[in-house]
Length: 393
Ligand SMILES: *Cc1c(COP(=O)(O)O)cnc(C)c1O
Image (cartoon, rainbow, N blue to C red; front, side, top):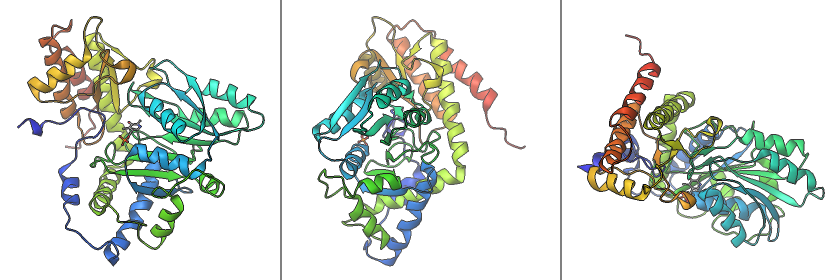
């Protein structure tokens, strides 16, 4: 029965029955008119989630990591310089990917728990008077530390420095859970995947690219075949894919978009904020500390929480799973053994969050953590009681 418990990992997330049912489809010829008709509105509805009217949405059978690779390969050439800050496991992996593709990666090292350093970006970009830096890369929501960065601020820094570089943003664990405004923030490529805010199985890289990034394709020399934007856009225009599309996932994405838009994106974001704040109230009541350095950086989709000195967070997450059948996120990279993570995104409600808090509280009590059973749950309950959306009676 423990497979009935929700997961509290920050992806893959819980899949609503409605989406499981939508993906329960027999094989269909992807050249048939019904697939052709289905694809176009899926792409245009995705634009609303990205907050773009001028960009193009491109979907690959892949994952977020493939989205990083697709972005780099279609817009840059070997030896091109890119600027990126390392402040968690996901920015770290994106750096590694860029280096393996032969890019010249200028890295700003930041403490884990901080966000994208707009001031340092501005400094570096202002000094780059020959405009050698072709792109600035930023992780919107660093899933390892539960830090949300100010992407508008990064764009502001680029504009202040009057620098023409493109801005590429990883929004894998924020899109569809937190506000994202691609056009307003001047983002040139936004990269997401199917298994987080979209509540689907893993298997799609979902990207939105600006006209400027599309223009960069004309001179970009990194090799690409499977991930070629041009091939994909040309095929999409005639209603198809350049290869066999993951049909069931695209049906799932159509339904996911319907769910998000029916709830209303603003309501989706409010729900995430409320769940996150409930978790943060519990963390404070336990007397524990978040990895995120300050409230402006708090993520609404994942919280990374330090365990007290002398405790091992891997033991805690293992115990919660072995004893109660509930998964929480382990500490990644520098945070391993020091912090655990509660994913609070996707198909979740206040009530489900309470069950997660109650479970991790039991696990902490079992392992003699200096917390009082019930305090975290009570703090979240008080917060949820105060903020529950009013239903007209
Ligand atoms: C999950 C995640 C990724 C990686 O996505 P995959 O789908 O596992 O390749 C990248 N960046 C962030 C911020 C993530 O949370």
